[in-house]
Length: 430
Image 1 (cartoon, rainbow, N blue to C red):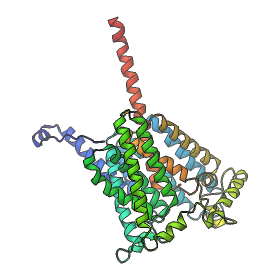
Image 2: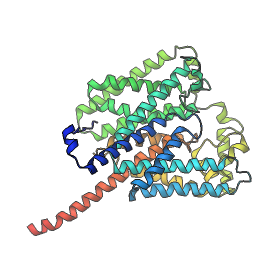
Image 3: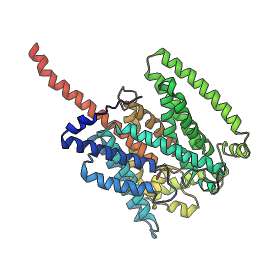
Image 4: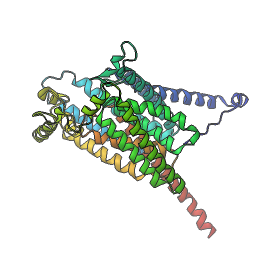
């Protein structure tokens, strides 16, 4: 996909009225502000992260100066706010609040970032391209840090690892890996659909991001990237009516799989990589099936949810059993109560169904929706085995999908209005 930009000559710019120049300048500043926010999203070593502080300020400034929430985005806002109200009710069940107010403040802030991204992309579809470009740059930068840390490339590089796994500029490799899935999927899309001449330029960042995912040794990230790649390829195959393009997809898929197998075999020869890969490749780890392991806690937690419909409060489950829920559905029940659980479940089903209906429609923003949608499905699937409640990129994905939903809503509304306005003219001709 390519975007065509038209640069105005200097003489033409000078002839523009002041209002047009001001509007152009404001659009440039606002686009740059969003790009900076996306760039910061790849650096979350502590809380509150620079991303949170920056985005909180950006939303606060943007809100009174033109942030328009489309009617189609209102369900996203209502359901996210309802979920956080459930968290506030659950907080009332706690005897010791500890850091709970801060935790819920971050939850509410992240909810607002989803609404913010949905609103700005639904009013300025051109921002999709900038957001994805900035995301790729951020992902490549944090991937390089993670890879450098894994191989101890320079003194102090180990700060970018955790548990002997690449973590980049994140606290946890299990968040670092999934963060890289969307930009990796987008680069794969450009590789599959773009001209052959651009393939080397796209292959380099894609290899860096893929290496970041691999060296995170996150089973969830491996699975997410594989599923996203398969779904992306399948959707492109179904969408296209060109037999040549379909043949290209098949050939490139076979070639990519062969290169992947060769690359993995080569990487496994590196010292320490083979042992870590063998350990992480098992579907079930010791902390999953222990007496109070992850799977046992699922049963305990769902029983507790029946006894505590208002929840037990954010992060309380972990203080009782030594480990948090590691399941977004159970976490919703424990931390946000039944109100939060129903709100999150409704939002998830709504996002999946509304996004699916428009997934293959030929629109300028369709490539971005496609990449964000398959990555969102992967995150939700992974949420069954890990907490994704405070994953910044999850809320960005929500915003990107709902922005496309709002764009399609507006597009259909304009088509109906055009049809209605044309109807009297047709009648008069008859």
